[in-house]
Image (cartoon, rainbow, N blue to C red; front, side, top):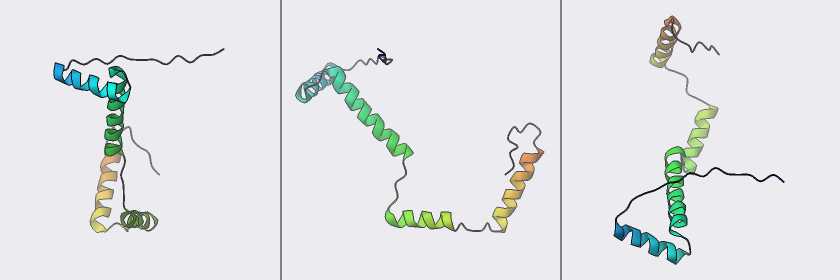
Length: 103
C-alpha cells in the first residue's frame, strides 16, 4: 500500500498580545485552531495577490479589440521597421550573444 507523504514546512510569527487575542477569537468563532485560521487566511490573501499581479482582465469591448489586433496586426511603420533592423544588426554583431535564433 502506497501512502503519499507530503512535505510540510513551519512558519512562525511574533505578534503583539492584542493581535494574538484577536486572532484567537476569530479562529474560535470560525471553528478552527489559530494555526488553521492563520494558514487559511494567509493562503487566501496570497492567492489574491498572485491573481492580481498575474491575471489580466478585459471587458468585452477590450477583449474584442485585442482579438481583432491579433487577427489583423498593424504593419510596422518606417520608424519601427528601422528599429527592428537596428536591433537585429546589433544582436548579430555581438560576438558573446548566446541568443542567435533565427525564425
